Image (tube, rainbow, N blue to C red; front, side):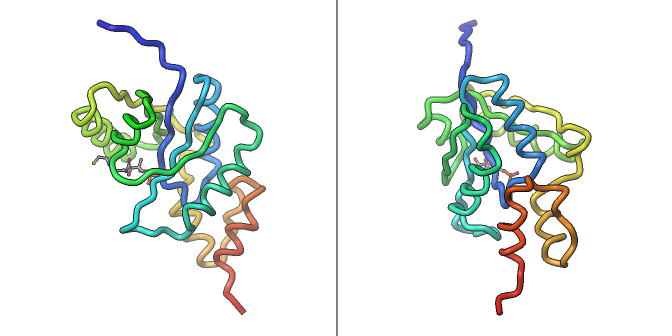
Length: 166
Ligand code: PNS
């Protein structure tokens, strides 16, 4: 078996918007790897609430304290992006058994498509196990207080996206 010590990983996702749970995973990956690339899925069929540029701006603000984290976006298959980036480790967070089911399916599909790419799961910290971007969007849409679930530096950005335009 060929052993290769990997120094870089990719943390892919929609980040629509970034949550405290995402930042927790990014911080922990940044402590394990020399370099972490946070890669935002650009899906033309699913535009999302925030444009990709805005998602990246919010991610950069939320991770400003992490010097070994860089940001990118990709379209198409994750494994193709991994090959283009010459990177073999995908990091994903797991919040629940439901996450485990969907994430292990995705990891196995990715492994079938690109056997050299490994997926590493980091369990969500209990504090963040119920936080999701979709929950943040829904709470914000109906005027609830979503601020405990996102980094303080992006609260206003999220609020602005949901405030009724005059
Ligand atoms: O934050 P999300 O929405 O849970 O992230 C999901 C993401 C972006 C990691 C996943 O949907 C993805 O990798 N999409 C790219 C298409 C792909 O490669 N799908 C997996 C094989 S079916």
